[in-house]
Image 1 (tube, helix red, strand yellow):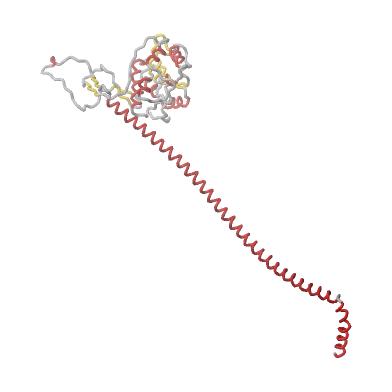
Image 2: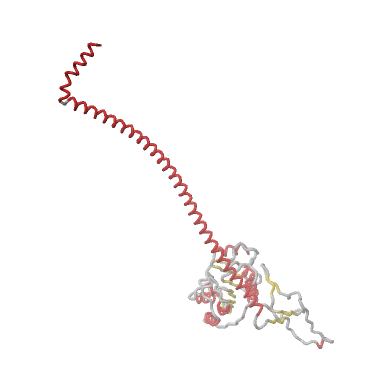
Length: 368
């Protein structure tokens, strides 16, 4: 079953692969030991894949999630499974009557609630469970999940240590059977004969199936001359892991290195984005500078044209001034000459010479 939801890290999707898929699918496959033929509540069901898996053997399986879009997706995605039903609601205020379920399954839910809300959620689980009901519950071990790996999940609000989880459950669920889950690198030796002393599952997107074991890389044979000589042993699976968990440590080292490189890549991208933004800013400043320069050049050309026009006007004014000064000088010269004439005619000499001048003019007229 494909999903139209996007994986954000908050909810597992059946299309995801790797360690997270092993963890989530295995928990639901394990829960089927307790849910066959029962009325089951899958609290915080998310995409709905787990509810759908439980519904294959349960009498009825109700998936509850707080996000209505996720519930709508689950309803559409698993509508072909008659015994699966999906409801919108909160785990600390369940929309179900008292003693409604034989089994409540809640995987990786408690850490998404604040510390003050976690007891109310457990109380609600107890309320909707029948007296002989069973709670199948999981929570990350803060000591290993976060502290040991120096890891912080942004969607986890309040994680618990083992003691805290035990104290949280004890008021309503004093009878507790603890199991441990951890993905690891193991060497497995599988017996080819039938039998299921150990539980093993093979999962895919739609279901889980009994796992008969992998194809052999090596064969180990216990042989004898007679059947009676063979040791009687009902074990079907032998598993070995090294004390230092070296393969897991190597994988975690690679994971940390990948995260470190991703952080460096993110930092580089942020630096490039900042540099690109700075370059864009500089380009905008350069464009503005060029615009100012073009405007300044245009203004300079306009001012130069005005200056040339003013110089031409000044030249015309200078020429007019020169002509005017010439006229003034000529007028002043004429005026000076007139003043001399007037001054001469006002002198006694003029009056003495005047009769003689008149006589000469008369004589000239007579001769003419």
